[in-house]
Image (cartoon, rainbow, N blue to C red; front, side, top):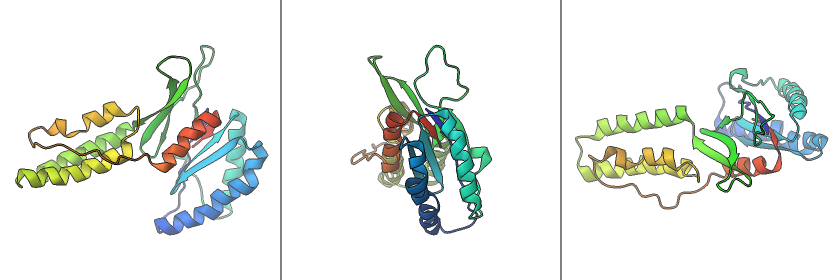
Length: 219
């Protein structure tokens, strides 16, 4: 699978208005006019101004990039070149050589790997290293700020922050990063974090389905 990362340059605009705007500029345009040009073997996943496009053929990526840039130019929009990339995300064979086989999308590093039995493939989501580093630094800073408060209050505050992190990043296969982010790292405080009701973000579920359905992608 080949993927290309395409964050948009929207400038200063309300996130809500931007989301509505892009629904008409990008989502509906792709579904009603563009997708059929690729015989239905193309998919779009968008969250705010970040989106991923998935295709079966690497050649479709180049075609889509031309169409996309022309479409956005009509509305005075452009793609952030620094954050745009193309990645082959299928399982690598011995004869294949691809420079990029992982994509970064919405705080995750995403790639394909063999399953445990070695008979097929699976999609792996792990916390992006930059996001992980920032989140860990924020937790440590918060601990420093509240260290003189009662222990029970400290635990309550940290539980709230950690629960939010686990709710977003709590995905099968990401256990190692989650474990290192747990309260066991801060044993001097005491208490534990509750991980009840951890939910899979719906937009990431769409990404996982597209990995299985369309071997080439652009994000």
